[in-house]
Length: 272
Image 1 (cartoon, rainbow, N blue to C red):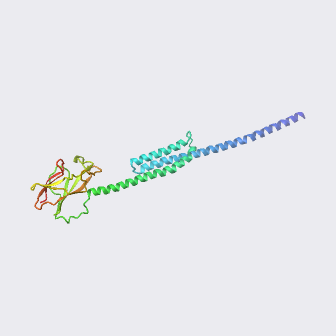
Image 2: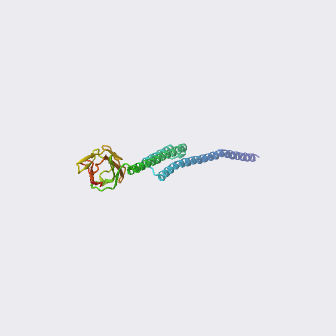
Image 3: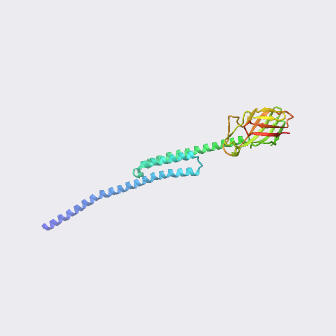
């Protein structure tokens, strides 16, 4: 009986020990499951942060490739992108981007709008510049399109003359009140006027037969020195007019001289 009782006690002890062992293992499994879920959550947060980060890079890349932006705008956009990504990277400790989710989301939402505004403003400024340039170029080359010459008794197109400069006399208009000389100049390197042009205030008509000078009264669409009319690119043209007193009625030929040291000299200009 004693042996049977001891065996019974041993079996009970083993069963109790097994039950305790099972009870002790259950919390460990729960902790492992929770830890695994936490890791999955961290991975998901890291993926979200990296998605926002990649979104910033992608938006920047599309913005600069699909739009013709100025160098100034491109520099601003690159700086904005780099600084935004750095703030996200700084928030991620030891490469753990799960800590940078909120920062990445904020950066994405704010920097995208900011970069869009920079690009939009730059495009608007470029379009405005193009419109202004078109108007300026038209005013340089077509200043007299709407002008009538009814008050002039004689208009001579492309008169003959002698000169060493590249300025062209395109039209002469004569009236009892004034002599109008229309000219065209090209902004060419070999012309010596790259960048700007002007007319000397002492420019005059010289009538050889009479040894008479008629000083310029006005200049239209060209600056009078020391002021300058600026050219914006090579080969640009400027059409302008010089106004002088009326020529005597019997004059057949005259000269125009800007100054003694200028090559803007036109001799033997024939009007009859």
